[in-house]
Image 1 (tube, helix red, strand yellow):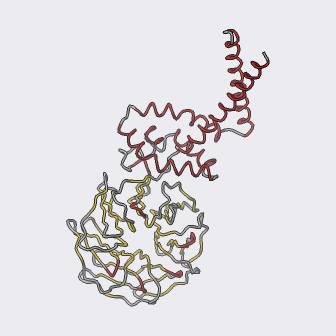
Image 2 (cartoon, helix red, strand yellow):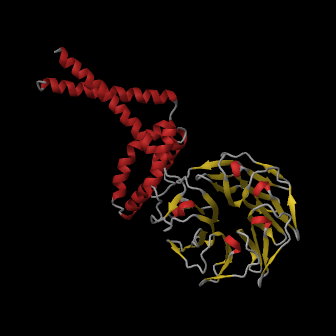
Image 3 (cartoon, one colour):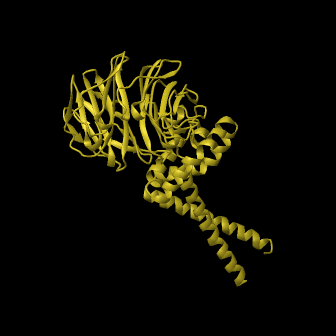
Length: 426
């Protein structure tokens, strides 16, 4: 009889521990199912991508190493033929039939809507970026302070205030208000002639973008973020990772990307966004605040928000969004809140989230292609949603009370099973 009591005690304790452990596991794993707003798109290439630009959500270009040129038509990315075998560092244009790409050894290409062709270049220095105001007013920058200008007929070299710094990005508001940034905190400004500006930093600056001549952002190494409103000043940054690119739609809607996958957003203050990759992200561009692309190493292309694309028929590239149909669904938001509050704040949770982001896209695509599976997946996610709701929507006292009730129910269940077993002659 003592042995039976001991056995039942062990079974009771084990069952309670098991139930509580399973509940915790469901909540922890379920929170990993909270989709980031960024989705990784199938690019079809593994080459590093350095730049992205487009005219609309269905006309986007990306360029990279080993003569990689990609085009997105709103449904899928495809490879374009290049007339040369060089690394392309930047792409920009005025329309879908007037696109420029620049790269290694002074390479300059032009796309006329049907094919890419080489342009005569006055330099053999590496070119890193291209930008302009029209098809006859285009700037390109590069190594050793190189600055070029295209007037619609030919490229020519402009006088530069530096011959030692690498200029990495160029952007402006007009033909007489252009900024170029680069190594060692270099910032140049063009208002008819180029001159140096005081940046206040020695960090290399890899990206520049703004909304006006007095509202300009620059990003760089060690998480550096600068802002210009007549003079340059540092901004508080949520990352120490190198930042490579910056772009936005307004002074309170700015994105920045960088090494090891960080994605930042500015809405009056900078904050980190959940990223589905740890690859280096080089550039970011969008057609609107709800249609943004980021590209990087290993052929990575991200799209924001996930619900508007990503190769999964418009329902997102992650399991929860595919199951519920939208990343804005309240269930997905609950999981996302739990992830942000409990998961990404510790190494184990971060590992779970990262693994989910890597493994989820093909599963989500399968679910999205088989709509009959969605109700089944939603039922499977229900315990995670319930546990996450409890975690993010209750006070500590309420949590303890719920756990206590759950434990009592578990004990009652064990006692009930034991009585039935005794009656059965155990």
